[in-house]
Length: 440
Image (tube, rainbow, N blue to C red; front, side):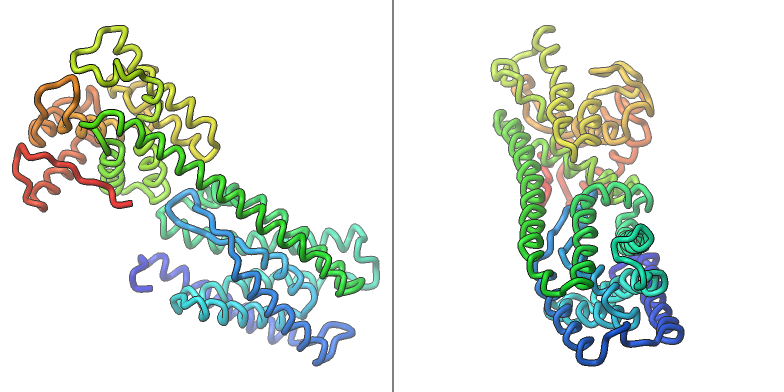
């Protein structure tokens, strides 16, 4: 926990205290251990059933790469949480989910503070839902009455908001991102699973009202949702890997510039950190840097590998690659934000670049960052059309002089300072090749 920044530690401690407070207030004002018709035997049997079911469900999480470098898990246990909130009184429901989380996280050997945070998160979200259900659900009217359905759906949404606000609240702090934007973007990633599992949880509740054994018929549904979700994640990961493979294929076509995109991504990531961008912004800009030349797939070798200056017609063909890169990435929802960065990474700060002649801050920030990193690597790398590589110092001088013309002057200055510090730190000799490679 010491590795986390102060704001994150304060947030985690606040969640601990909030969970303890909610549990204490519930114990004082709603201390009952049994709902109507329940006794110690039924509660004990149901508790054992739900703890085992939750632990089995948590063994098969669906891991998502969020819109940052962070990861989050969604489990079919969410549907079981909703059922627990309804079947038990609030104090028992909270105790069950806390116990299950503590046992499961201990088995997985998670850090103590993560273990307590997950248990506190479960206690708050399930506890709030159970309090609402126990307070407002009317057992004297039909389960499917409009009033009771509104109560159940409303309580389920309270559970959803509590769960996601707390989880993404912490992750937004860790990733130095704006909470609301971070929350919205990441809910888009997992909304299919969330809004599938909430109705499933309500179905479990309904079957418990009619005949608990009917829930056995829902087991195939749980399995189907799990494998469908896993397949969706797998397809997305395979798409990302395929795009990176295409980008690598572009680099590999020119032996002298192999790993160019990887090096540009490395400089881009370091520059984003120097500019104090959020983890989320840095992640997307770095992703765009890895893919910035993907549009060169359509450029013929006769042009791309030409060992002489290009004709006007050939240069116009080269100038199409940002547009083609934009077209390719726009077909993938995950990369639509990065597509515009790729499109504009050859724009000039003075408006004389291509393809759209954007000027100044109308050029996306990510494109302005990649532009500097891309130009620097091109200058100090061997290329078919030039006889001599620039030294690091020569390249930096050119970048500094082009500040306000080709490059954003602030970004150019920060980049030059960063590279000079890197050269001094690693004791590079002026004129020596300087090819740092991103560690994947």
